[in-house]
Image (cartoon, rainbow, N blue to C red; front, side, top):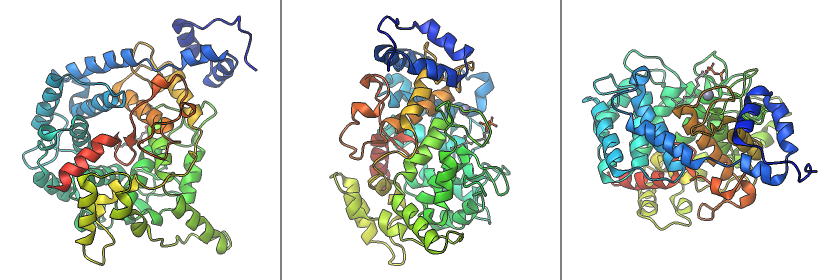
Length: 458
Ligand SMILES: CC(C)=CCC/C(C)=C/CC/C(C)=C/COP(=O)(O)OP(=O)(O)O
Ligand SMILES: [Zn+2]
């Protein structure tokens, strides 16, 4: 029952004060007792203020933020992707500046550094490539030196199959994901890059079910997303214990409604994407999950053996993948499939394209309304930008990943990419609706299609 109509709509200041003064769960109960119109007002995405905050950041890319000097391609990505999620436009001068700036971060021997003249790094390479895909268009996409970038990726490859983040840098699951994601979207994933990556990721899945950054470490949401997405992109996802992974990630959503990154830690809005994004992937892996579970039950529920399921034939099917669209890409993917070695079930570079066409589980496997509530109510700074949790300051990283997670929630009940989500899928007014992302890469779906088509011809 909603409380009496005499309850007045809380002001913005009152709301922010609640966020800080009460435990999130207590506030949630208070919130639940409010009348519908008051709830809707409190759940409104403050689009104009977010845009003001984001545009201000984009203008300050140069001269650099001194403390984030080695992270400027990341700032480009967090800001440009957030703006794209809001379906807003960036002035062409600012877009040109971003392309020009990222070109100056490109190393003559391939890859992108944290700033002009800095050593190339896989994380900033991923951020730069995703930024340029988000800007889109010939000038932006053709600014990437693919040949040199491929050489950089090969240089980071280790005998174990994993990758180093940079020359003499650390080896971890992030490095595998950033390499495989970039290579896949740029249509240059091949056997040399893929070799033994699956073994490395598998060695990072822990007894809890989630994936750690490196063998023997603790399962964490950031690495779980990276490991799962990598295994899909290299067509080896059936090797993971998906039931265990689903179990682990499901228990990461707290009573505060948001996600924590690992067991016994606090919820944080950035995990709305790292954990929520993993759910968006799992939602399309239900047939493998079901087979793994059936196999486990048929063996008396005590086997660790994973069935070798024909993921490739499910995923790399150009004809199935082309359903519902008529672009050049469908023809290209189809052509590539036909032109391949018979021992390889499909063009590995088409997995990202075909994966998103897979039918998803009807309902999300997490509480998507509760997560939207956490993002809108607890992580929004009403003056613009989003934050980890009440009491923390807004920043571009949390803005990007909270909005990415919000988009995942809003689209988690739509199965046809051409029809927009029903209002019932959204918390708050329908004007909160964000653009849809490709969950394997975390770029806007339409921009992914454009890039896939562009690089398919390269
Ligand atoms: C594409 C790419 C580069 C992905 C990165 C993925 C990612 C977010 C990894 C998490 C890193 C990590 C261990 C954070 C823990 O921080 P913490 O101890 O401050 O936070 P916690 O208490 O929430 O665990
Ligand atoms: Zn965070």
